[in-house]
Length: 120
Image (cartoon, rainbow, N blue to C red; front, side, top):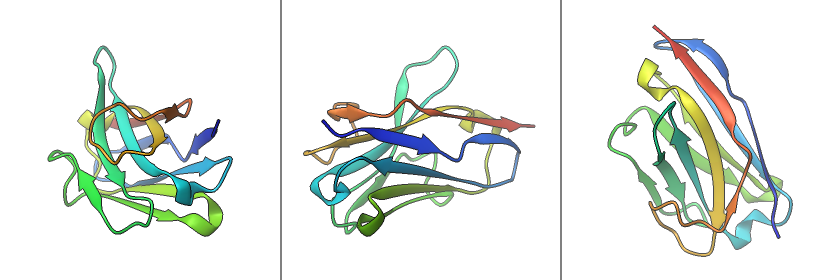
């Protein structure tokens, strides 16, 4: 069972940037990966996903042009570069992995999450 560990969250002012990282405990090249956000009082929502080879990416409309998902399989790591952050980007960000590339929260494996707080 693959374990995922997120890092890189924190407190940032609106307009600022953060880069989240997710390290997998076994070769990340075996999995498609995704990032999801859970805002306070809301359900977990799709942010971005990337195919095992990095060729195919998907983004939620709300983050297109601001966030970039990427991966380094040699480091078993997936990244989420978050620019032009807005207060509505606040929430816990979860990394996920699975054998199906999707925008749904049906990934098999999940990390514990990292908190992102954007102040206005």
